[in-house]
Length: 446
Image 1: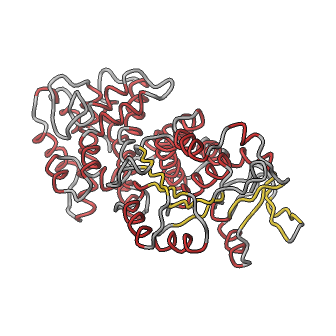
Image 2: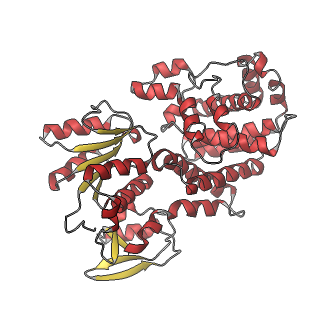
Image 3: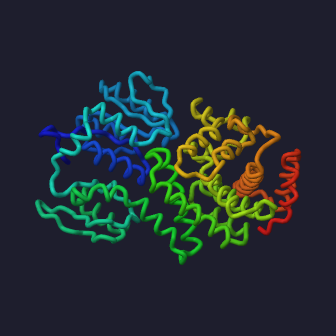
């Protein structure tokens, strides 16, 4: 780790349990702020680190946990007479005047700038950072599946041995062998460190372009890409590489729509896999909606692409699968969650539309349709159906409800075939705004 004019770097705790995002946060904090990063997945681990090392601050993505972990952390530290500053992403009951609390949609670059100000670290300081020839990467920040953009080394005393050549895939077996050998760090050349951080997004984007991927592999890879885009858009901000990955992911999803002819087989595969509900919900809504759009007189490739973009991003403001499953105000009232989260769920269509509107070069009008995807023109509320919704919004509402009923059927093992779902949709949406599209549900070849 480098030093600023001979001053030792600060020590921080990164409180994060998800491996991929521990890597993203950890590398950004380390590379852009020059701090020593100790990672903890649990409160117990964090307290053990505090006992062993002087800690300057704690960084926690509170929204990644089901409870207010930041609050628990504060009271646990207070019990042992430790007062440590915290930078917190997501809702918490802690006092905003005492801690740095960020909305869950704040980009990581904004957060890094705030932390840099707190540490009195400037861009000039980082440019003058004294670095050795090799830069240490904690092994826990190296993710299986990465393809090394540059050589990676391990250190034996003062000798750096190349263990991975450029374009070599990082495997679980490789990482396990290092863990078994008690190796905690790998090394890259210091001047190549930024390329290492930015490589993952570009690699997945490239893989999605492979026309020879099997259907199963494409579903898995698209699911991974979807999760990365959602997290990067919410935490790292909207970059060109994020947009490119989203574009490739949407194209890959649509290729799967054409490849998969049988809806029952698709649902059976979903039942077996462990992908996020958000991805499966997005994929199935897109699958049904595209088949429905093709029955419309106004169908075109432009409308189909626009619909896929809407499906991909409509729930971008929601971080948890359990929140995506909420579709009525009654379910929201019964949900055991902080009030701030409930308010976000209630208005997530509006919040998602605002996030999307910041994207460069989005398809015309998609932010408006995302705002309407629960039937409200304002994006507020979950089950208000207005009379003058756009045709794409109507298709989305029908397709999403079909997807919801399908997943509900899988979870409850209740037999619900196509005919029964279509019947329920006719009964639920028997209003003027749906009358032109409802009859086409019976004709879908799925």
